[in-house]
Length: 229
Image 1: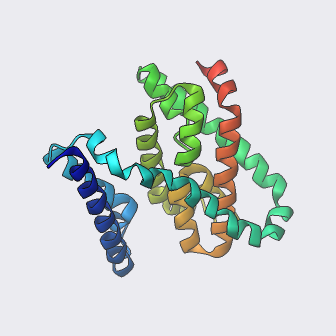
Image 2 (image 1 turned 60 degrees about the vertical axis):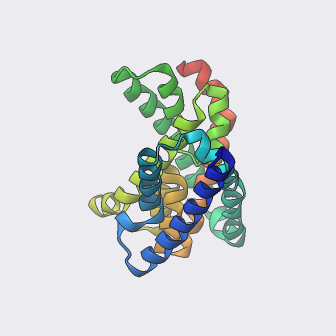
Image 3 (image 1 turned 90 degrees about the vertical axis):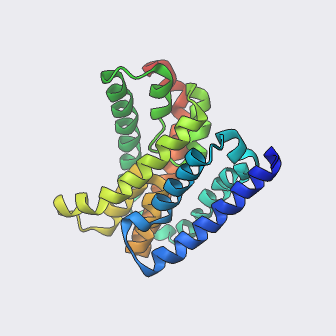
């Protein structure tokens, strides 16, 4: 089997696993069965035990990564449909986005330095709290490694989504907008998906915060690179 055939096979397996996993999750709503959790684990096992290189896997699957851009923009549709909510709370949402961006970047870089991680990892971790298309764009200004950025973004999203409900319960946060803003700022796409499961208002706020956080990070990335590195 040549590299092209192997890449096509990997693409087909990825799609089959994802849609099968999606059907399974619809029947059994358990966190370990979520497509964002189980499918990547199965794919990693396939690459490791099948001795398949990352380059061969991405050969024909790279367009799936490209589709993250249109998928992210699609979140703008429900935001547009709920502009009244946004106009009422624009100040608190804006303050939350700025605060979340500052805290995410500084805490990520400082913790990485505390554990003496490499400069490349520090630069890649700086953008972990925004969704992948924005993170990859911001990483170019910071000098991050695209593969590491994608990994850190996915891990951050899944982890934030997994512990979000527990944190809200512990902190007695019951307001839907607060939950949506928290998920959107801390766990981007995965958190936004979870927010839509909680309710339309939570989903709309999460979508807006996720996109605003991404835009802000891309715009300030050169400044972050100058200050932090």
